[in-house]
Length: 419
Ligand SMILES: Cc1ncc(COP(=O)(O)O)c(C=O)c1O
Image (cartoon, rainbow, N blue to C red; front, side):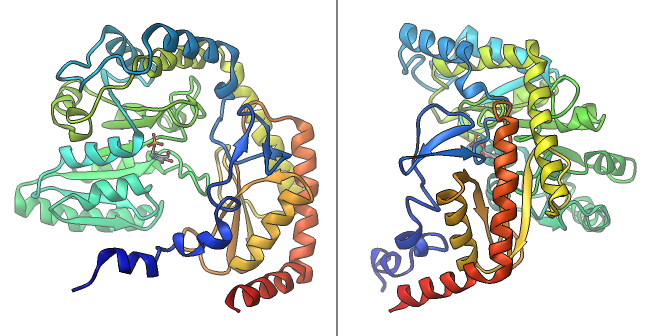
């Protein structure tokens, strides 16, 4: 027999195995100061492109005031207990009503975290007779929700409608045989590459196949659509999204999430999502804080406009400088470069230490081996100066990458690590 602890001391997992060299710098970096376009990292001010504070609400004076006043009034505990037991309040219901109105759905229900929410929505919607068909690039919370499913599930190639059609043909046969239904899951915006899910094309398949559509719009909510209602609104198909999900962790700069759809669906989820039935209700400051954030989303369209101004200028600057930004059609700005993992580490370190620009780094298996993705997340509080400095810095590190400087240093670093 094996001791579980013995095993995990030897194999710390795909990311954990790099902890010795990466922790505190490439993973678990500690930012200091107010959440904004510039923050302190390792004692130095950096232009920060790695925080999903799209609309700049994290540090908005009205938001901070609402959060502080609510915390002073209620503390962080109220209401205690799960919603169904003793955690219900008028404010929770008010927030749900306002969220439903904002995304143009009949009804909505709060989730404590987007991650558990997604898992639980999927888990409670399907039985073993049903079939799930989901995009291969789906967020971990969708994948984990699908893992709980005891029936058949198929993935379709990322944003590939032909592949989805093929899987729907298979799924239809299985569902017909089992007397079950089909749930299709995709995202409004894929957070790593910045591509919108092809919602319009997926919805069009409803004329050929019977299925219900769940859209995770974590990154679309607040950033896309005329009113900010997200990718469905942007693509003109909001009404055809049967189950709409978004988190407060991005545009709303908070914690919590929600699911929206027709009344019967939400009533069912309210009584059956285990992540909510068996967990404490969201604390009041989160709820009142979310109401204030939602009010700002509604009454301050200039925040979304500013976000897009920054994103458009950043993307134009990078494209004009010859960078490959892939297929992004959102504010998320991925920069694709070629290189190994050690090269990527040395390059990102240089970007931070020499040019004071902080980006996240994404490597295999999120993108193919040999590629490096530096992901920039613009916000409404970034400036043109931030953009100019960043584009210049990116051009400088690309020259060094192409000249082989980072490869030499990276190889040396790996050699030393192995000694
Ligand atoms: C696409 C997507 N879905 C779900 C989540 C999970 O949301 P939360 O942070 O509220 O748990 C995230 C990230 O936070 C996300 O990017």
